[in-house]
Length: 135
Length: 361
Ligand SMILES: [Zn+2]
Image 1 (cartoon, rainbow over the protein chains, first blue to last red):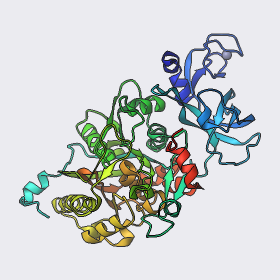
Image 2 (spheres, rainbow over the protein chains, first blue to last red):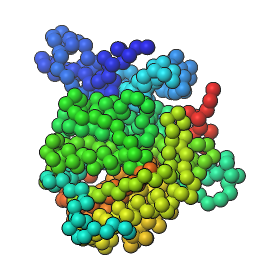
Image 3 (cartoon, protein in one colour):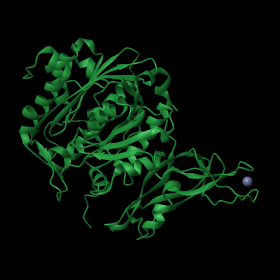
């Protein structure tokens, strides 16, 4: 059971809430309160757009404990349009080939159950190929 | 029709807020997987017999009512153009909430950035849980307790393997942000609710799948409540079927809404835009509301819409809406209902069994 940790991370996980540096405007994800670019304090909340592209990826056929029911799946390093790189599962692929540079968008999905059938449900960001349509 | 009041009493049965209220943003969601009804029939009847729908939508392994509500709500926020912190209510109606005890609505409110100055609650009334939340949101905004309120109807319904419901029990729904009518893309002119205690469909707490009263689900339940609600709303508001460009009825299968529309005097072309059950199945608490979102995707200023939900147990909520000029600039701010229906991945029964957790290991 890791309920306190899940609770503490909920905003960054559900909605890609990070930080923006008030000194050099760098966007930070995950939030770390100190800007890696200029070294000054950065605690201003910033919600990322969720748009980005695949920077690199790997297929997982042997899933780690707690993720077995999702296997096989693809984990990608996604470069957000605001700059940071995040590691996340890709979803809604349906055998579609993943390519470096593929545009993706964030969706909030069920990541896993914390303690089998009894524990809390852990929700968080995944990325899917951008859906066609107006926006 | 057995409503016997005089004309003035009839007007008093309408649910009409003091401050005119309307929809300022809306958003749909349908998961991408489709199970053809012929595939269910292949497993259970050798492919014999008529089919109630062409296919139904099935959620992915990482989707549930919380995640689907979050995406629909984000679409509604994109169209409304408001800061989520201005919402004073986030309400989710469903009969497939992910937890038995712990609200879905807090997950949704947190994910869309509506916390912490907000009312959050889950609503239940079989398939009309979503429209119930919509009526309550009218009250919140119409009384000026809140400027904006979010009401969602969303479901990932399950039928017992081999049961008639397994052909149709689909997944999807829609989210609506209500606000003052002058900011709206469609004003809700009136609502009306018709409720009796009718046990046509139920699920006891420890049971995984629902039970239903077989043929009892038709005449005294679905048809009686929808017809009574639609007729009372139209009589009390001095309107008739010819006044509405579109009508949306709860849609547990293809035939029921077609028949109830004809009984009420509506033509097939009036229900066509909102009749999604043939291609996504019965989305339960989402069914009438996603039918309405498909209509709003194509309606124009001045169009009037009648929407009537149905929830087993039993009751119907009827709404009369009038579309405003704001629809033109807002509908393209998010994915449309048809965009979600068009992204379609067909699955077989075995994949369905895995995705829906019907496999005991
Ligand atoms: Zn900086």
